[in-house]
Image (cartoon, rainbow, N blue to C red; front, side, top):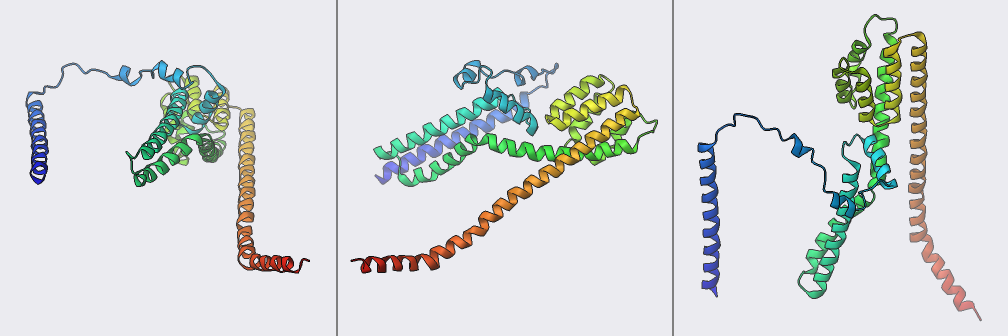
Length: 297
């Protein structure tokens, strides 16, 4: 039996050494015979290939639906540039695959092919992944609110600077370029807006608000379009109104967070009371109940 194990080990070691030597020889041969192509081939078409239609139809994402519309709004608000149909199909495929793997593991444990320690190591990880995929709507909504709040604060800083430049002879493109240092989340999108400005300003503003994907981005882009067409006192008055609206939304969001925190503190304050009753008072209640049972005729 030992000789048989030694022979198997030697065979596996020989195969590994042979594959390593073959891979090394292939790398050396490729390095020696490789020539840089004269014409550069573009693989943009391969990167832009559409997902398989049968996969989308199998996951119920081939046609427009309410779930698809919700994911489209959430992904745009989170700044995730991913087709909503692909995202929804991947989410459903992940849930289905996790469920199938869990069922196979349970079936294997009953038949004895898979040990229970292996199952209890794998199933919790599958459960966490499936739970995250199932609750993606809540997670995306939370991140969208966080990102919208950050964008709102940065747009407030930008609009304050634009009001500061009121009456200046500087072009709107130059004013926005000087506001770049006040941004962080939208800096890349604002830089793209400035790069595309002189080619097609209206199209650049449309793409800018689509990249932001929030209501604040839409209103800011429309205000910039009005300012580009005719920079007057009325436009700056509208800019101040938008600025006041953003500040009111920030205060409303703060009030909502304070209310949520007060509910959480209320629940946390109730936990010591519950444990006090369970540890100190509940034994006395049990003893009183036993005494009343004894005194019953």
